[in-house]
Length: 138
Image (cartoon, rainbow, N blue to C red; front, side, top):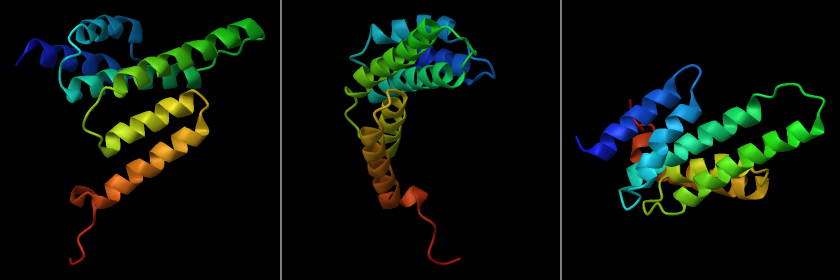
């Protein structure tokens, strides 16, 4: 197992917990980003990290009556989505997972038109993939 695979595994463990510590996991993401000439699997892992973190910040709202704090929270999850999009654009193998991640990241940026377009592309690829189709005979 190479260094990249180990880092991906550690990253996966960090973000799979019930209460992920994204700040801690970011250390491993930054190490993975140092070798971005690596494979698409690593780029997808990094993108999933940013997608999950962005969604976590977006969905976990601490009720604050301070509009400035809300603006900062929104900026944070949109910036995280931008980070994921930048990495995802480097992926060469465009699978249904690729388009799903794009959809989620665009959704977190409030770009609903592009999010819907990416979901449509993801569903189109899923329909063509025999792995996801039901057998015609039982």
